[in-house]
Length: 450
Ligand code: PEP
Ligand code: CO
Image (cartoon, rainbow, N blue to C red; front, side, top):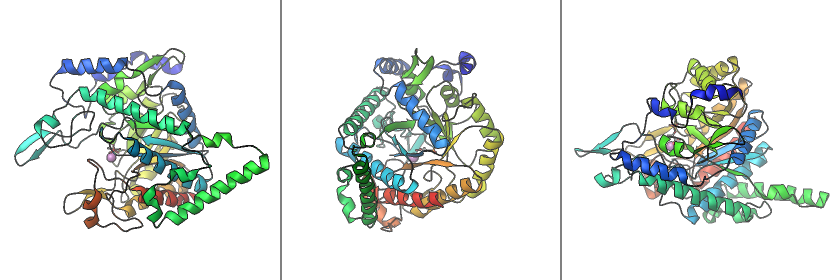
């Protein structure tokens, strides 16, 4: 294979020869090495044929035949690995995908920020409060959020705890899907109890009823059940930030002659670690998985040209997804030149919009939030700009939860800054709650239809 020759100088640990940003500093290197070795001996969370199936779906999304819904928590926490939380997350993603199927009239590929979304990039390595300086919280796979010395000390054992939780999470998701939880004949199973009080519930119910009607109509005409539609596919993704964790699960698949990261289907590189010369780009270039890269306001066409060349030298469709996240105020100024640049270079990419990370701000009381209107404005602009340039926006990337939190302001209930304290649970970024998430799905259907 052409890529094989270019990968002669690549190995799962070749990133270690590069400058690698956002890695925790472990005091006890021996303990880190032991944890990574244990991790590398555990069975994988996903398998290569599922990864290849997602790759094909991403290529289809690029051709305009599918739409990608990627979403979940900003960061999963070890504590939140409970059946109730997993069910809620799965339900909201399923509900959104129903709304999108109805609106976009094409298959939706569901990709959770789930089962491994434990490591977080931070703007500073340390945090100081009242004259005390401690390492920043970097996600539950690294250390703990409380501002105490013992909690903030990076602990390599947490890599194993995170991996185990990731496996438990995906195991339960698989069981729910296999057991008919996602059966379109019974969308009432997917209802979230508190949804009935939502101003958007009636609209959602109408969509579901219309889909059920179509299904029953089809089945009565053909005289057989729509077997395939009873089972939905669901994929896992996370930011491939902690490279020792990622490396440990990178396996050579003999039959395919390639290296796969078997800790997730779709790993992505965050905006802070996407430097061309840095360790993350080096590690990702050797993977057979489809991969994604976040693209922020600092990116220019020359950077993307080089990035697409390094990460997808054979220009394979579906291999590389670019997730742009500029913020509502910057998207119109930044996105067109990047779309034109990528096209001029002839690079095959799938474009996805993340309307969350460019729209983060702080309230006067210091809480991190996002305004629902800014999220919608960025999404609307993204669909419009891609449309005007004859490009395709093939998906969205959202931070959301099936819970009734108050982290983003606005939405059908018009949450204000003052409402946020009521149910603010995120230790990192503010997420859309179930109602806001559903409303986003309804809006996307409208924006995409224009
Ligand atoms: C994230 O997805 O949570 C994140 C940190 O995003 P970005 O790399 O785009 O800032
Ligand atoms: Co985030």
